[in-house]
Amino acid sequence: MKSTTQLKRHPANPNLHFWYEKTYRGLAVMESQAPLIREYLETLHDTTMRALDDHGRVFAVRFDLRFPSDCLFTECDYTNQAISKFVASLKSKIGCARTRAKRASPYAHDTSVSLVWAREHGSRHEHCSDGRQHYHFVLLLNWDAYRALGSFNSGKINLFTHIQGAWAQAMRIGFEDAKGLVYVPENAGFKLIRDGGEGDELAAFFERASYICKARSKVYGNGFQAFRGSNERLVSY
View 1 (tube, rainbow, N blue to C red):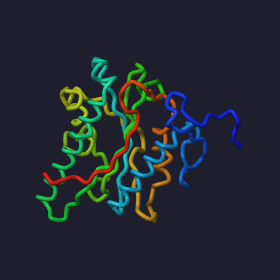
View 2: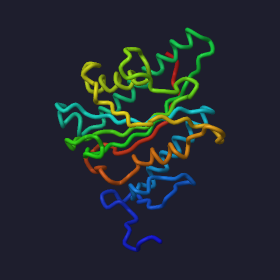
View 3: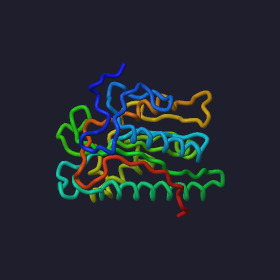
């Protein structure tokens, strides 16, 4: 039974509603991180369903983006420029990669790019012990185009190098200087299957990804977004 003392709205942003339940739309969430934000859970759910509308099978992956230790606060901590540049660069890299793949093989698959991100203050639990801002990120792509991040140290171009390269461009630093700024937790990748079926990991993914919907560690009122989701069909390059 709910406690009568549980807050219903976020005191720093009354437009947001707290969520204390064990599930959301029939999917388990990280109850240990309660309260979560209902509107963020809805964004995560809606973005995931849109990705599955685009593709029968989806590769979903979790990672974090950190700022360099010498990043200027005015640029990194109080604007939306960094994440906007990162998203634009990542979409461009994925689009170009799919164009090259289709030129090499007529059977290569396109992908939409669906994403959800949350901006938070760091802590020891967030792998950002200096307390700086960082991003939690969820990326959803066509499983038939991408089904793994790829090796982090192989020197080959893959999805991970796209992510690191896009963050390096957003930070205006070299690719090598961005090493360590992209953090990938263990067991970060999931296979989602439209309408379920053998091998579907939607339930496990949603519970894991609901972590980024927690109320804790988010800051409001500084002129930047704390949470966003989007789904976009790539144009041809």
